Length: 414
Image (cartoon, rainbow, N blue to C red; front, side, top):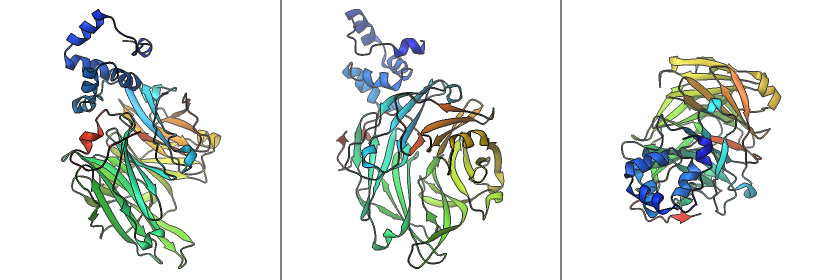
């Protein structure tokens, strides 16, 4: 079925009796296969046609089987992290038909709305169709779990702050445990102290299981976490560093960024991973991402407008870091990137592509590693003002009731 024909179908038209009889006699497996070949917007509309269709699409098996190698769609989310109240909800789901490296015009299909009285909204991460976001204040962290496709969200129990946390760095992570089939949220607080010694603590909450936050042992991980984690193979990853601060905490200097810290979501254990030896003890601006099954690192050199891309070929083995490419300075100079840009990796067939957010010019850059070529993506239907970060995202129709089964937390509708 051609995409142009498929996109022009009117889902809201009332079918005639013959079509009704035909579709009602189709086995559910065939119907599910048909639905998986539709754009997300059309699937959302199909839920409103019949109760049986709604039940089929909302089934856990449907969402788990939606994305295969034959699925003609790739999705990413763009989320605004500019912390302006007027921009809350200015986030978009982009759907690419076909291969990302062949597509210059993704369509904006779903506006991801979050109606909540929050002033600082930070995206923590996404997993299996759910987004985790956090409101950061002086008194607590308040986490939201949101399914933007179903327009449902849950507010998690408040994570209280200690008195010293007004001068601290925060690290957050959100992921899925394959063995227990539970989603987990983790927060790491590191106190800023005079000298080199850090004082970190960590808490974790399992969705649908924990009613309060649990403490984690971080005695061996005394570094400063100042970012959100990226996920690869059931492990969350952060770049961590050491800082020097003055007694009044007014001057904080980054003295080294020598490690990546990984957190196994299943076993709830931390581990350290060394950076490429060529990057040790250097002042760096880095971004973590993944391509295929490999951990990747983008090291941005501000003085020459260049991103060195490193790939860890053998996970956990520091000697396996390989410089994959040097992203050309042409478009960096043209589009005036002034800091380490947010980026995600997408692996399709034998093509690896980075989608890079140009915060200065409010656009997306697609960079093909194999061809060493780049293009500017025209995103129709959006106005990309603010700080938009790209996230890999697979839309899901699984109800929040299934995720929070047995929990006393309220499921709210946006």
